[in-house]
Image (cartoon, rainbow, N blue to C red; front, side):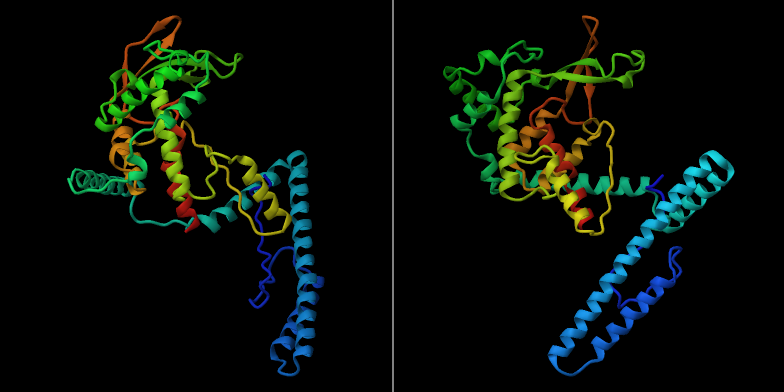
Length: 383
């Protein structure tokens, strides 16, 4: 309820004319406003000694601070009184309560209903943009076939033994295997590193992904043991992928993450799924803004099944826009071409079905790809 109660501007820019029709405006505020306005005029029109003008400026700033503090205090008191009145109405007068709520919502609607006004329908806009993006993506891909095209060496260089060592050392024993039944335990020995490097280099050069790497076995896990087990939304799916395919995607992710960090591709505000970053960074920023009494707008957006609804063509288009090309681009593209899954329930597996959208659950590079996918959202908000 508190979030719906209208807030009032308390801008400190006193040169602008202050609207005195605020519901919390009173005689004390009017007197302070007139005093501040008088001192401001004295400071602005004075043409004498610098020391006197400096003192006039201090007097004006002091009166401005006093007025602003009183203004914020009156607004807080008004809002608190507003909340108390609504709380009382919920028990004593429900009709008055709903009338009050209606007035609040009507004000919100009148303030924001014309914020976005486009004659073009949402469906037409999305369709037009989608066609443009697909055609632009095709042009990018055609350019890469040019024999004279120079791809991004930072992303498309040869795979090193050090990169293989890094991804194998990060693999944990005891993890569930995919359909190939090959565990991490047989892949982490130094004697196997050169074999893995040769295999990965062949796949990286040819972009020919083994078909078994595109298969996922989904185990539905109940979110809450007390929930109705007949409702599908009460389950979350755990995808089991081939362990060696996860090593390959870990190599892709490490190289991709290094490129994104060193070239500042991702917006600085994007902290999710990034090395040496966490929610604590945003919490600290938010608390600092609040402590400094700065204006702040906080919005929480919960993206339902975010990974599952990523459009793969748009994801590939955004990779190209961020100079992710060549072997790296083709590897990611082929990893997501014709992916299939089967659901394991009651010791039985369903028929294999094709997954045409979304990024893989449980894959090492999925979070990085999702960050790239939503990165321009942050950029648009900043712009």
